[in-house]
Structure formats: C-alpha cells, structure tokens
Length: 178
Image 1 (cartoon, rainbow, N blue to C red):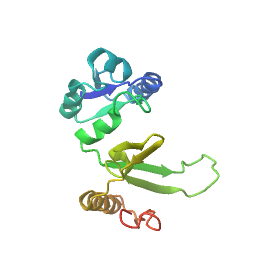
Image 2 (image 1 turned 90 degrees about the horizontal axis):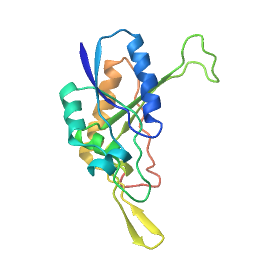
Image 3 (image 1 turned 180 degrees about the horizontal axis):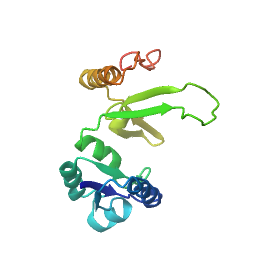
C-alpha cells in the first residue's frame, strides 16, 4: 500500500482533486490518502495557509496530489504554492505535450517537453511599491539555479532519449539576467 498526501486546496481545488482521486483509484493501485487542508479557510483558522503538518506529510510520503490553492492578489498571505516549491526544493517544472494516437488535433507530431526553472526569476515573489502607483518586481537569476535547471534539462533529455534541448530567453531585452 502506498500513502499519498492529499491537499484538495480551495476554490475549484476540491472538485478537481476529487476527480483526480477517482481516476487514480480506477487504476486499483492500493493507496491510502493522507488528507490535509490548505488555503484561505486554513489561514483564517490557523494563521497560515499551509501548516507544517502538510510539509511533514509530503516529506514523509515523498508524494502528494495537490489541488489549486488561492493566493490573494495584492493583500493577504504569500503564495502557498511558492512556499511548497521553496521548502521542498521543487525547482523544475516539467510539462510534456504530445499528440495522442487517434485524437485529431490542429498540429500533428507534437512531442515536446517544457522544463521551466520554478524557484527564481519572477517566481521569487520579491516586489515592493516604489511610489504610489508603481510596483517593482525583482527578477532574481543566479548562476547556481541557471546551471541546475540546464543540467536537469540535459539529464532529462538523455534519460528520455530526446535529441535536443532548446533554451528560451529574452536576452535581447534582459541582457544580464537572460
């Protein structure tokens, strides 16, 4: 039996996670769900949108299914999603996209994987008001994180038999960071 941390989240999260759980359970893989709440109601109740017990469960189980968690815009608390990424060192966002056999699509032969650095750049979440009406967001880029995501992408490509890695940047505008 496998134990999986289940974080339904809030907003549309519980509905989406419930559907995902049904799909997983249809595989008949023996799973015990360790359920934890997170989000706005949890913040109101405990003073944090993501209690330590959630992190401890994920660390113990080494796998989690998480639904969307609301992050108030402009006020309130910082993003629980960013907190999860930082505390669990989830630096690589891996998004495969591939055509499915028998499914007609606009483009044929799509088979790509987007790997995005998930802990720096604007995901650092560092911003401040310069003067009323002007906000500055800091785009943090370190050599360490850049090399780490590049290494991850190349290792992923080798492991999965991919033939090339393409780096996407905005160096024509961001001359030092990209």
